[in-house]
Every structure is written in structure tokens, then in C-alpha cells.
Amino acid sequence: MRFISIAVIAAVLVTVMGCRSAENGSDGEKAEKLPVVEPVGDSAVAKMLAQNYIDAFAKGMQSGDYAKFEPMIPEASRKTVNRETFDRTVEQYRKYFGELKSIEYVCELEKPLVRDFVWKFSFEKKSSKPGHDDEVARRDILYMVRVGQIDGKPVLAGSGVMNGR
Image (tube, rainbow, N blue to C red):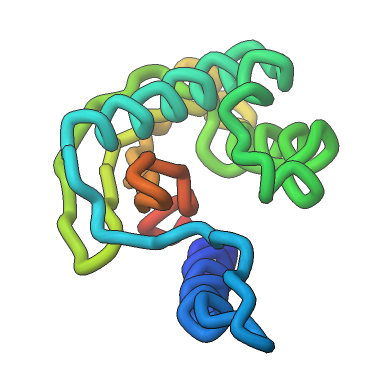
């Protein structure tokens, strides 16, 4: 997930640099206006977008229903984040962590161009050891949603687990 975030930011920066050189246009023509990347302005609006994403992701993960998550996937990510990748992600989370039991907002990390919003996901997994059926392992992970701003509007710029297995 970290790679996806870096790739999105790199693509946005390349676009911005292209905007600056294309503004003048060739032959004195005014070039088509390209998106402008700027620092996130209203933190509350950015947090609401991140919260909506987390809510949809959690509902989709708990039910295994991709349709609950799909509306929150940014258009630019729809080729790589699809039903197959979603199902594989849910399967991996369940295999390694168990069932998602709760989500708790932790904090906001401010950076020059983006804001990272962090949640704690708490999982429970029953023991697979023979004779230990009543034992439950609990595990927490930190999950981050990165929000940027393009043309004055907050946009999802990435998401993923912040700590390892």
C-alpha cells in the first residue's frame, strides 16, 4: 500500500510540473487547464472523506461485500483495486488477523501536501491449536488513509496498514 501512495503522489507531482510548463503552451496558445495540487486546506472536510472511506472499507471487510466498498475507490485506482484484489485483501486479513471487531480513530498526521488519518483496527482470531478452541488471540493494527487536495477538493491519495504483521 505504501507503494501505491508514493506512486499516486509522484503522478500528481508530475502532473503539476507538466501544468506549469504547459500553461504557456506552444505557439502562444493557451493550454488546457490541468489540475492543481495544493496543501490540504480544511482538515475537517479531509477527515470526513477519510472516515467515509474507513466506514465503507470496514463494512465491506466485515460482510465480504465489495459493493459496500466500491463507491469509495478513487477513479484512478479502479484498475488495480477491484473485486478480485478486495476479496484477496479480505481473505489475507482474516487469515492473519481474524475477524474485525472494532475500529477506533487514533490521530491525524499533518504533512506538507497531505494529511494522514490513522485508525486502530482490532481483530480477534480463535486458536487453531487442537485442544485450545476456547482461546482467542487479539491483534491491533494501525490503518492509515491519506488525503490530498486537487483543485480545491480533497481526494483520497492512498491507504494501507502502517505496522507489520
